[in-house]
Image (cartoon, rainbow over all chains, first blue to last red; front, side):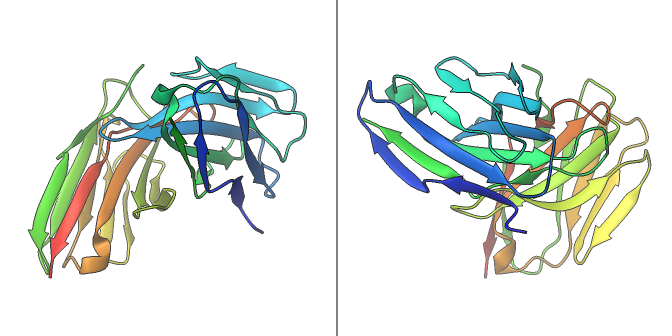
Length: 113
Length: 111
């Protein structure tokens, strides 16, 4: 198993550009989520999904869109990047309806100029 | 949004010393997790706790699920330089739903 994978590892954007952060898992996990990590703020939940076709907002969803067309993939879209979205983004997954733990991807570092 | 209170925020210790950190919540949790994040990496699970009062070890790390179900503790014994990183606690109220994360404890170890 590759676990949770994320691409790209690094990205620089200009204000107003759009991009998609990719996340995939090969563990057949129902639950997938996106977090952003900023200094002193810990991990804040952006969006999450409990299964294909189902998504919901987390703590800080503004400026981000998600979709879940397959169990394996959960892309995060920035439609019009802003400097406030400069951050490190982590994708995570776990099996739902169990006490199984949550696994994180290696992260995507995003700089918006 | 709801957050856990994790303390201390940072620690500077000498190699060989023991370390203690804790998290408290206003909610009762059914699951407590402790993660470590190395610089430039994603969080990696250290210990998972599922029962009140549970005490679990992973090498030099020991974590406890508080009796009140509103707190958890992580201890590291005989610290070494590779213990450097950020330690996060996380909790969840049931078997479904989102994890709530503490803001992390940044550990620095002087050789």
